Length: 192
Image 1 (cartoon, one colour):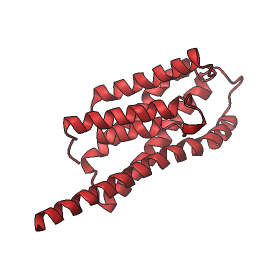
Image 2 (cartoon, rainbow, N blue to C red):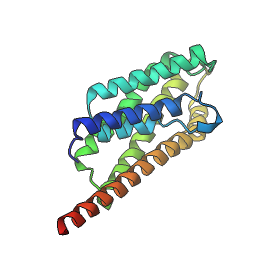
Image 3 (cartoon, rainbow, N blue to C red):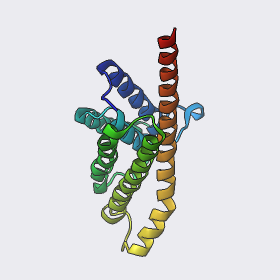
């Protein structure tokens, strides 16, 4: 897929930022209480936006949202440990996996399936980095051991990966439907 035109890139960037704010920070009441889309947005950001500075802005936005939630909304700081810094490589895996696949991304069935598979691998690796860092380096568990880590990873991993994949699959389906509609419209215009 070719890089998005500047105005489209900035529009997608803004939409992704709004979605991150709306889902990462649950301060909008029961009306909007969607699962956190951050992991999916980092993958989709790499796929669609690609720019390094946009990755840095999304990373800063995620940290800022967490800070506001903890400092001003009473959210627990249990997850903020020295391991929190491992969100950088965890999110980088997602962004740069999307970015690496972006040149092969198209609306064909095979490319959409490829993007889904890349997202699945990246989400799994991202979760392993963030969760592993929290468990082994976060200082929240006395005497950590592999069996306990494996049980906790198995408990939480599928939830995080499934949520990420749900957002990615919906985004790819919207992309495919939108691209098909535009192609059909262009075809009709060409015949008129």
